[in-house]
Image (cartoon, rainbow, N blue to C red):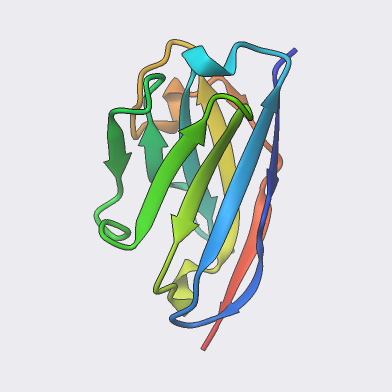
Amino acid sequence: QVQLVESGGGLVQAGGSLRLSCAVSGGIFSTYAMGWFRQAPGKEREFVASIDWTGGYTLYADSVKGRFTISKDDSKNTVYVQMTSLKPEETAVYSCAANVQGIATMDEDDYDVWGQGTQVTVSS
């Protein structure tokens, strides 16, 4: 059974940086595409970034392009998202998800397994 566990969330001031990690167990991580999504209170979950199984193709939401970087380390079965210049409106629960077909997409319906999420709070 594939399991995803996020870490690295916390409280940061506006303009600050955080790196989130998502450790994957119970599957063949190197064949998965991975995505990051976020959900703010009272809002729908939205796409943040994704990376395909090779690590060579990435997608980003327009709102985070140039500030967030997604990467994966197959030796550690872990996907990361480095977040810089964070804004208060980016306060949300950030979740990672796995697409076992290996295809990076922006559509949450394409992802098969989800983590529980980690809280990111950006203070103004």
